Length: 111
Ligand SMILES: [Zn+2]
Image (tube, rainbow, N blue to C red; front, side, top):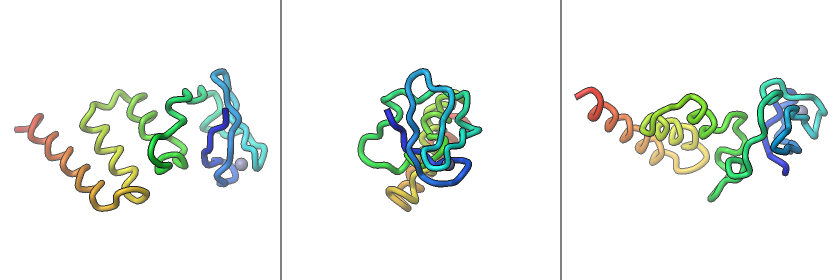
């Protein structure tokens, strides 16, 4: 499968040919191995595909990967998700959703 990501060496949005066993992410544009992707497992097909838009696809680290790898709890994960996508998706409404989750977090854990 190919995954579209920003090359961290040349900065171009490019395609990477990856399989479940891929350890070297070689940029199709500049041919260099991406340092931050090298040694990283290829994303599963499910996480490389996005239903309903491409607002996360050009991020070198996907919010879902960051949230999952750091075991970030649900409400904090939602805040990260909405903050990461607001410029590419729902603008102010996404910021308001992030604030809503922060308010719920205060209510449930600090009051
Ligand atoms: Zn490149």
